[in-house]
Image (cartoon, rainbow, N blue to C red; front, top):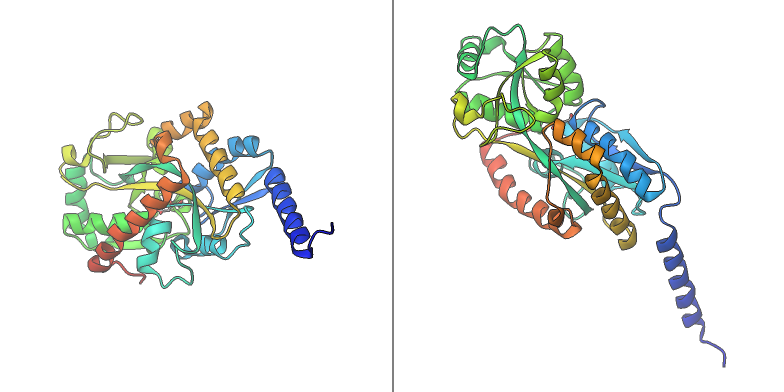
Length: 323
Ligand code: MLT
């Protein structure tokens, strides 16, 4: 008996889908970092890319598409072909805050699908070494006395460093000058060079320079000290009680990406996060990896939505805007 035409087409489509499921990925995958090279997102992407490539059997190419607080790089992925070959890596500011401070031409929740949550890190209040303060109390006094000329580096409007800097100036009752960069990689170079005074920076970005004596750290924005920097006091210990902030990281693909590709990518991130060398490198920078049960696609979807619902009203009420 002859098979009806539509069932032949269906069988062919299923065969093609199953072939693609078996073979993905067949070419390099691009992981889009929305900030400059040398900064914290770039560092996390580069640490994870090698073990991810090993588990996927394809190169993972890190691409820095920068500008507008990371919103350009995320937008590039939101509009990319949903084929599993373009991945967005970012964090609380790029995937939550930006939706409240920019008029984005994409929807952070509807145009992206979760791959995996990675982990997070607290901020460090850091200054150039020439600042004449030896602890957070002295730093705050110096900042307030010199506020008209204190320059604070940020990774652009809406970035983690910008929101933290605004939070810091409000917490100490000062008005500071924010200097935007394309990421905290280049901002850090200017802090080391003494061209800016302060950054309220992700710990992972500052720690190598703190250890090298190139910048000075005053406090960590966490309730407890970090095992990666046990000598740095918490903000509560150092005199700025309750100034807590931490930035969580995740990975996403464009909405409509085949489930098998998103699932394989999730498996690659999970494998990378279990890799001993990657864990050590992230841990040394003060990045805490989320427990295995939070590395699922579902956990990231729920967390992402909850963070949008929590922060958008707060950010809008605080009046944090793109200037
Ligand atoms: C970066 O990678 O440069 C930072 O994550 C930017 C930021 O402060 O949000």
